[in-house]
Figure (cartoon, rainbow, N blue to C red):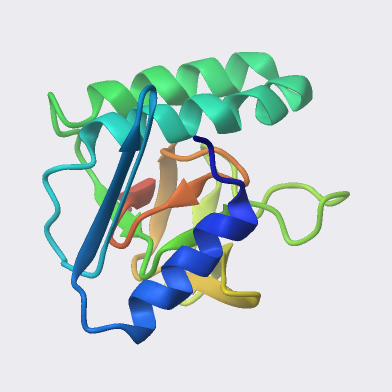
Length: 161
């Protein structure tokens, strides 16, 4: 059983409307866990599966950064790095560029001002601009363009000036 993005978004909308707090679906290699809870421990395996499916499209654009970001993201929980994180305020698909044919909002080494748009998250066909809550320099990009992110997932690590 594999669900496409549309089916997953429909499940997200159904969960949001229901009184349920979370739902987990498993079938062989496939597993999906959706939760309205703020601190979720269970989706360790699904989180590892989701970037793998998203890595293929990203790899066609730039293979080297996709590999380095994926390894940095897997190392981040083991040793917290210095700096503040800009986190996803919702579940959805993150876009690191304003439009597909335009450059990324921010790259490593770029200066960012508090209130500046650094990404867009699409959830249920609504596009929400994600603004920096800190001023500093982008030290690390922790997600891939078009990756599905959970609530409170770190998107960028920023070192303050």
